[in-house]
Length: 311
Image (cartoon, rainbow, N blue to C red):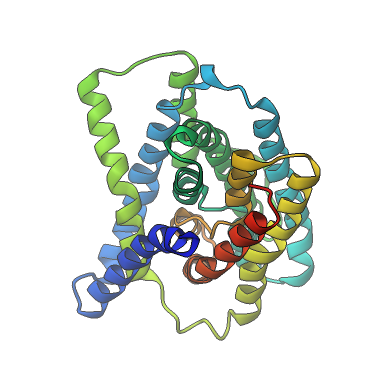
């Protein structure tokens, strides 16, 4: 049952990535088209997705403040650590930001809620949605900071701040947060259009990812790739879940935290790296390999925690 749950979450992601790879292989998608589509996804579809998710979150129903503050603090500490650690082992700036993002930015939005609902039923979707409303904006902000910080050999803090403020994904999240917190409601017809566009974002991003990723540089990226995959799927979950247990989290709260720490790298990591002058090949490979191996690592984390009686 546990394995089938993990597989049912992961298989649709792989199917779309595989479709993109096939479409490029048979010549349906040119490099020019892929570049244009990545730009469109970064500037329109993913910002709309983030806006839609936060816009639909009812922050007035938040009761698990301890869980939310713990999540925010965990994300900040994790990013701060890797912003210092990664430059010690990776000499190239274009890879540094990508590696920090790949290790710290999880695909929580597509793993947290399905896992919670599968293990705890539909009643868990409310708390999972609130976690999405907090975690997704946070990881997007920290990812932009990392990519902007390592964009140049000598960080220009003015340009970093400008890059953050003008980032389309963060603008989408901020507008969603403003509307949600102020109870501003859009006309029903506009809401439907935005939700439909948001529904397109992830499948399209996965297909374009599959079409864009190449494996010719896997050997050259091997060291960075191994570190990022191990950090994302083994090191961060081991530390994060252990601290969560020591902090007293159990049941649904623990499965949500486990999903935040142990989920593979976010699909939008590739698009953001490609648009912000990061090593897009490495970013795409981190997404693909963490998604592939997460089928086994998530199975391990879930069965281990269930066996120990934590949920």
